[in-house]
Image (cartoon, rainbow, N blue to C red; front, side, top):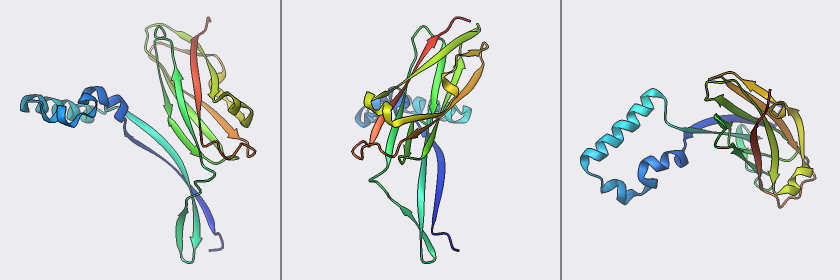
Length: 195
């Protein structure tokens, strides 16, 4: 095979330890072990019921691996120097009856490589809802290195009662970003909009 490099992108879902923590005594082993046998069995039964019903809270991750061919074998190229991590943060007012989940909530990429953020938004009310999303980054100076390729998430949108929708935006971090920047936050703030 003439090609010496390839890229593999994957997504995976795992139980969300942070959202499970309150139900599991904040992961306190001693506290969990000191529960009575009946309380331990009840906790295990609850977790099994959640698993069967598909209700265990999960989080999604997406990553891209660069593969390099060495002889007859392919190896993962760990280019830690250029990898950047973006953490997705969601802000919604308590009075706003929506559930918003970023998919994935953390993204690894290299400068110059486009990446996509998907926001799953669900209207949890019995009324039609109009909303818009404002986007900021932290640290603020990162904004000058971030280009928006597709701005689907930033157009005001309408959700019928109980409706779920995915809003997708694609970004590109310019290659002239300082090498010392290894992570930043992308903050999505939801606001009610009048129809």
